[in-house]
Length: 562
Ligand code: ATP
Ligand code: MG
Image (cartoon, rainbow, N blue to C red; front, side, top):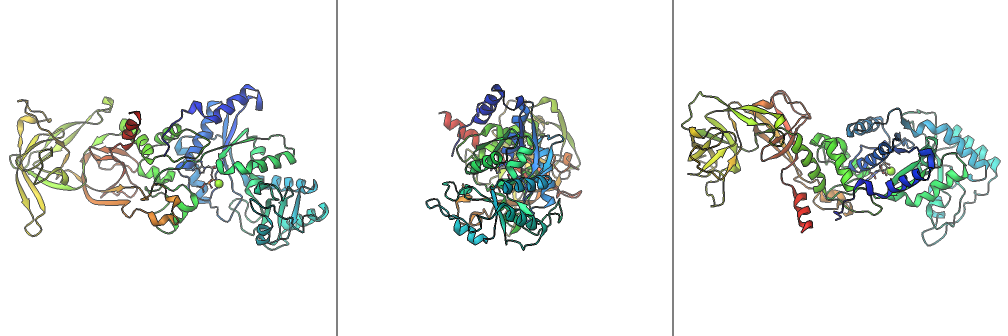
């Protein structure tokens, strides 16, 4: 795993760009773009690309376009388009008027293809997909030329026009660039640039039955929009000669520079739309916004803030070499952000009933609690204290070792913002032997959690008033995969973690949380950061645990410093 972090000012892309600006290229204007294909929901890997493209534009007073690369209607849906718009906006980026669709350029792309044919640089091929693959050769052997490669310009123009007019069945013919079947770069061996597909398009309907291929559409869309730097991931490095070939052959005015960077890989996580689609489709998760998924909608539902994701992207930086980022860093970033902004409350996940024997039956006291010790401006709140309370089941042990600082028979603990209590008796279920209730006494002198006689207790535990508390469901999450690199597994679904979701259905939380809106966040003291789920109803709140309080990343960093 690679823990080395680069600062945003130091990365190689920003160096190229500042060099270009110094050299007076592009008239001093920087235009980038984020070009998602609307065939799935965005994930945290896309956030890296979004953050990079929009930040670079921002830092240089430039603009960043949002462009849908919607050239393949088979896999593309409007639902995806809407979710992508929502997610980029949620991350806090603004494309102004610059929302584009590659499908808007279908006419111009068609004209460019005609120009290539006229220049003798493209031809209609009647070989089947299979045959084209067979003719392609291998990394060590050159390809062989199609028997249709020598067609005249006139014949090619006529056939291409008829392809467009719908005269030929799907898959019967393609338009190919005429480059070099012996090129050591397979992408340059006469790549297909148009194919016939009678599939209605979400935006152009049935206007077209031929669609351009990615490599052809992408560079030209960049050029049409006046993109200066076309930033993409490393797998496109071998496509760059083709990117440049189209633009050179077509002698376009604007020739953007393609720059590749390493995509984000995150441990215990899958970052591939195809595989995420499979997880959703096969029901391994509840949907694209399942809080266990690395999709932006999943992270949002889980309680991640856009700021924490942007900060994560800034910290991982960009490099030219593939690496794996520890998911603990992502969790560290959200913890850091939530620590500052989250009000603290008390919530008991596994309730154990406690009766304070010397506390009056009907009495209710309003105790003062601090909302966020990190931020005094967040003020204080009142929490009710009563004779019957709930505490966390694992804050009590009948047989407690010496170092156990919580509650045990005969031992005293502090209730957070409350009183000192001592356990005097344990009630058990006669049949199962399970502890069902603790009988305790409290020391009235210790209100607020301090003893005037200076008596110390070792432990402080959280609690709620039994009659005032609200019932809640709390969903705890673990990694969706058991292996650090599930993408390496032959079948990535074989290493799904069967315990990635634990739903606790009878938790008790502070009464002040009544009516908490979906999306609102808090820290349950000692239990982690939580976010109200849209599944919440008036009757029952549902919380997702965003992240626990245990910071494994801080430990890793500390170990590295040593
Ligand atoms: P996936 O590999 O998940 O299917 P994709 O590359 O097919 O993603 P696109 O919609 O084409 O998805 O991606 C839009 C942009 O996001 C592209 O520029 C792509 O390079 C970038 N991108 C996709 N995945 C990552 C990643 N893991 N890290 C960084 N950038 C990414
Ligand atoms: Mg892609």
